Image (cartoon, rainbow, N blue to C red; front, side, top):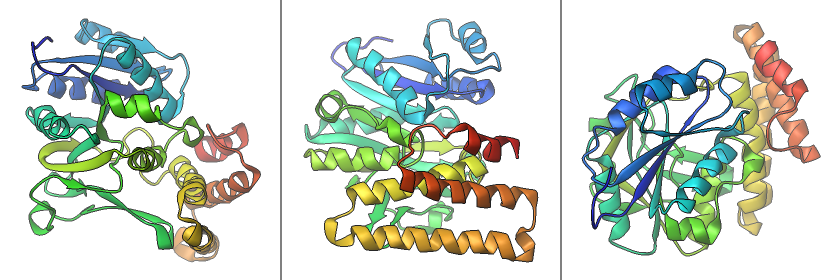
Length: 320
């Protein structure tokens, strides 16, 4: 899709064994009213026929097949490198389990183009499963207690006081990120050591340290089927969230708060492990696996094992 005088945007949609959601996302993307975008689907080694389904339904879409599951971080990095090599002024990273408003991209670009120091912008995110509820209205970091917060999460949108105008935030959730070429050239892509979870937090912090603004745009809207590919509270998600939270705060918290942030995460995790071990409501196979995933997350953090989970962790998370 061409548009003389409009910045070129390459929309990157990462897929892993989720053809149905990817096709629905693509349908919403092609209803966008912005006149100059191209679409790139990056497939992370799917085995469900996703590449063939995308080619059949959208033959004009560029498709890259990684041949393996590289995770969110490196999977998107593959797309980012391709987009920059083919002249993108901006890259829009979009989760495949989302639907976008037709004017979302234009509204994000209007804010991004207004200030050259704006490196990352993102929309107001609603729940696709419960459209009256929010998933994120910008995100903040609570350094002193080792926590991140997606503002408004699960609140009814009409009752939550999110700002009416664009506002700088600590970071934006990786569900949807519009990133300028200047920002990407200055700081690079995502850190693959995270594999998935917390790579978006670290990316926003790195952008701000480099002098770029990270801006939440409430007028731009998107609907997200939360954690469709991994499962919001699955053993795998539990593992990556715990391990990567520890890594992020250890490496990025202000020196005066680093120890207390990591200690808070460790105490919360140990308390959770205890509850999942001892309390009767949690005496199920599912919570045993989540408990073991947390224990392995602690082990791997202290041993410095990052990137994709090892085979022993995968057996706990996926095979039981």
